[in-house]
Image (cartoon, rainbow over the protein chains, first blue to last red):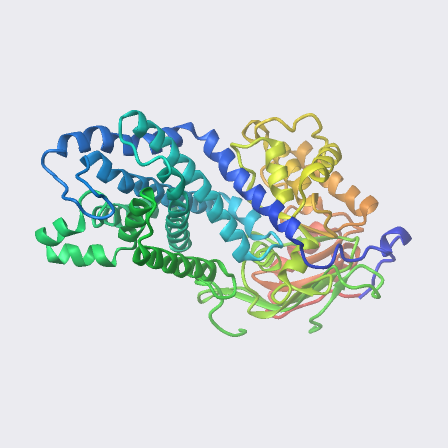
Length: 291
Length: 264
């Protein structure tokens, strides 16, 4: 095998920078991923409008119509009777997070089909960090949508205690992380965008309706013990309750534990799924030894 | 002929820009790469030749760690892609076959996003973006939406993006597919300039034989097998052909099943 002589100036080319990334580099990377997600969201005005209209329709129409039918007794964290609109507001916040979390996973499937996902996955940063950053970006967008909804609801007369708007932030963050992590896990097993609609129907609607978002659990238990059991094992139930209690400056510790646990579980699943050496992304890969 | 591990270009003393050793890969029962080995030296232009389905994109996916290398090993400037993927990927710039720009974002936003994926932010990113847009002849277009660019312009931006973190090895997977003759020539000239002036090693995957020069190094894949490796002139001579086009045709017609390294 002959080798060509290299020009002198090129012979000195050596590997580029070595050494690990520092905290500053990680922050730059995180900022870039969050900024991109926000820019994409701002460029898709229809997405923002639809994300706002959906819960408002429930608040303005559904809640007004069912106010008389679906009475709510005094249950924690409420200390008095509350309007039905007040009761379903935490559920509607959860609904925004649920749809947004699934939307961000939809964008990952889209990115993968379009090839954009590759630019993320070939970054030299650890893949777990890239996925967590992507999740944080999705959660930031989700929380912005929730607050936009809460502002409109406030003008509609649906008000939480003033400090509740601050207390609810960590609950929204944690619930958003859980739902984004679930979405990310789902996106790893979905091959094509067309398959995503089915998953949405199997995840979003059952997840939303089999929860205390629209009616309290005791009412569900009275109506159907089986449905009640389903609600109990539904992680979204705990996200809604965590948000509901946080509005009143309280912590529902069971909900906090379940949501935190599910977040870790779904996140670990997503990281494994997107790991080229272990994950579901490798299902199409080598299955045997050398031929 | 059975020599497995060949090297294209370089003096032989420095660390190889890319070292592929005994790599195999399958999609289920279908074998896409079979015991492929070659290495390329820094600051050389190496063409990865193969017809559609030869395994070029699979090889790129393994080198870029999108797929896991389960059989064999890949080293980039000495960094194993499995064990030290971060270090290895910092040395590589990649232009994928599929367009990967975010069409809703501007040229600057696309490049800035990529810079952040390599930990480059703020003023440094701005400076590099400005310089690279000049390198690829796209200065003044930073605020254009990616959607408004032609195919050739998108490719130029993708090349600028791949160079943002100053890699020592550039991988381009069929970068000129779907472009007109003028755009293809322009992009190829830009890449060759980078090898000459910047000393960047390039692995240029293509099935378009007219993109190959006699002075280039070449690695030829056929149905997942490495069938030849060496300088283009060596390939022509060893295969008894008149031109690289003839040599490529012969190599793709060859009935020999094993690896046939053409090495004078």
